[in-house]
Length: 73
Image 1 (cartoon, rainbow, N blue to C red):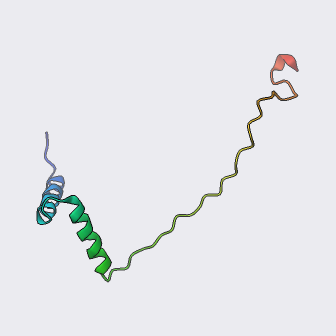
Image 2 (cartoon, helix red, strand yellow):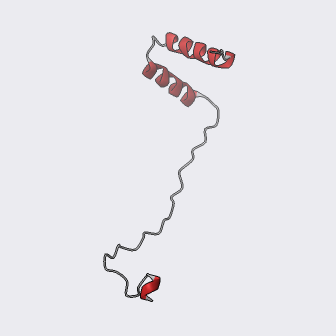
Image 3 (spheres, rainbow, N blue to C red):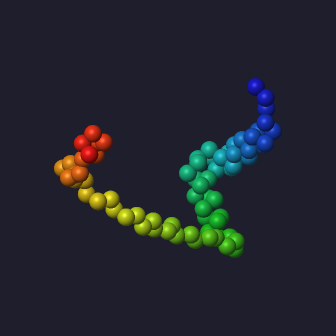
C-alpha cells in the first residue's frame, strides 16, 4: 500500500488537535465553534432557498375514458 504524505499530515494534525482537547471530539468542536465566534473574520449567513414544486394531481384509480391501446382505437 502506498503512503500519501498529505493524508499522513492530515491525520497527524487531527491527532494533535484531539490530544490538545483530551481526546474529546465534542470538546474540540466546541472550542473551534467558540474560536470562530470570537474571530473578526466575516461569516456567510446563507439561508436556503425554498423550492416551489407543483403538487401532482391526485391519483385517479378509474381508467380514462379513451382507450390507450392501439387495438382499441
